[in-house]
Length: 384
Image 1 (tube, rainbow, N blue to C red):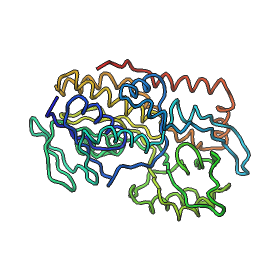
Image 2 (image 1 turned 180 degrees about the vertical axis):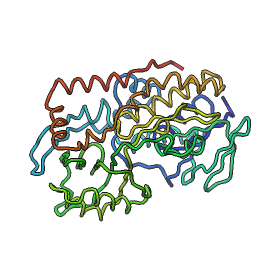
Image 3 (image 1 turned 90 degrees about the vertical axis):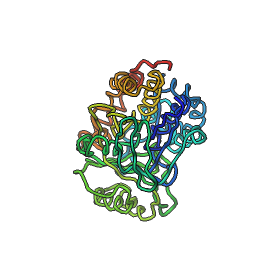
Image 4 (image 1 turned 60 degrees about the vertical axis):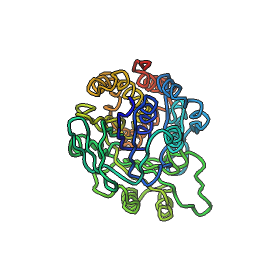
């Protein structure tokens, strides 16, 4: 498919994974990313089961991902006195292979930067189909035209907004927020080496766990704020955790020295079709469920299927987009499931106790692990 041009918006995981396959199949690929450089932070992500392993292996990434895996750590649920209430095993939080999101992003970028054009610090401002092209304008660079455009830019997708309509039409707020924070040092150093999780009704804080140095989930009405303003995030966290026990007051004090703060809603995206004309959606932009546990796997497998169907259709994007939808929508049904918020931050002490029982019962734990493995493998992968 030489000289067929594709613009991908988003350089996190889904975008570079798609760029990998399209470049291999002969497409001319440009990836545009709002951030000024590759974003190396963020939570740990994981892969589960044979389907995920197969796609990573076909990309030649499986060994490299395994070499960089974080190993999945057990996490202890504690009360306000630090007493252990239950232990969440690493195989539950970290899947089969857990890796830092930044490490995975770096691997994908290193495999694609020599074959694709990356444009950092820019974003799409308009999309106009002109028959056989999509005319694209950008915030910081000259307009260009592409044969196809793919939105791989997350649950708050800019491409989805421009091509489909306002975000509230396609994204459902699920009643909770989460934050990932690199805290400033505490009085005697960080003291956060042990992976622990503390709950009060409607709010959770974890230190030293698999997702981030400090990880917060809390119930809240929907809020209006600038997602790119760390000071706004700190103000919201202080408000949400005011009056907290355990080490919460100390943690809030340490927010002042935090140099990496990210706050976002737990939300689910759902679109009636994964494509509209020459524009397609991939990953969280189309079928995201924040903290649902399958986002990275869906992104990587989705990229494989979308690129493969484009190759199989010999560039007939209408046929390819329809085949992508047909092959993938059933697999992505896991994204329609409920929110992780009530599980991570139960709304009452009774619900906290019930959640903890889950990890005290080997039978319940085995059942949950089997269910997640079934979801992760519920697709027949073609050999494109």
